[in-house]
Each structure stands twice: as C-alpha cells, then as structure tokens.
Amino acid sequence: MNRSETEQLTDEIIGEAVLSLLRKKGPINFKALIARLRAMEASESDGQRRKAITSVIAEISNTMLSGQRKNIRENKEWSHDNVRSLFGDSQQSDASKKH
Image (cartoon, rainbow, N blue to C red):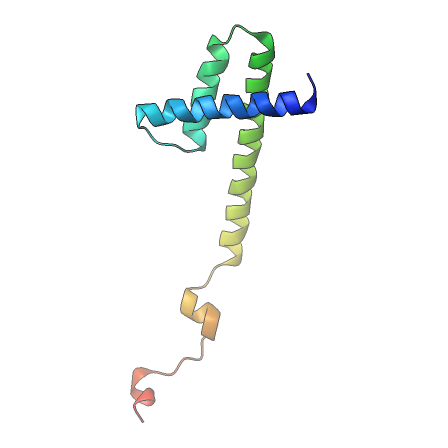
C-alpha cells in the first residue's frame, strides 16, 4: 500500500470513528475516540485495516500525550495571575488613583 492509500485509509478510519461518536451523541474527545478505535480494532477482520487502526490509535495517543506535556509546561511558566503578568506587582491602590 502506498502512502496516499495509507493516508486515505487513515482518514476513512478516523471519519468512521468520529461519525460513530456523533451518532451516539456522546462526548467527542481523545479518550472517546481512542476507545471507539479500540472497539473497531477488536472487531476488524481485515488485517490491513486492523494495522491501520493500530497506527491511528498510536498517533492519536502520541498527540494527546504531547498536548498534556505542553499544558504542563505552560502551567509551570504561567504561575502569576493575568494582572500581575501584564502590569507587574507595583499597582496603584484605588485610593491613590483618585488623586
């Protein structure tokens, strides 16, 4: 199977999984998508499709993990509230603004 065929199959598999989630009117997030893909993988009889589903699950899992790592880094960097980050700690009190 060449690259374009693999990409097309991957797109079809993701589309099927998302449509299935939409029909159930359940949550659509990484965890739900992965759970649906695992169910598809378990019931798939075609070896080529099963291998493609496994690859899709791995790719989505890696994307999810890298997103979590990014959020952790951003939270560590963003330790101040919005006002202090923008203006610093030397804000005037309300009483001094009136004069």
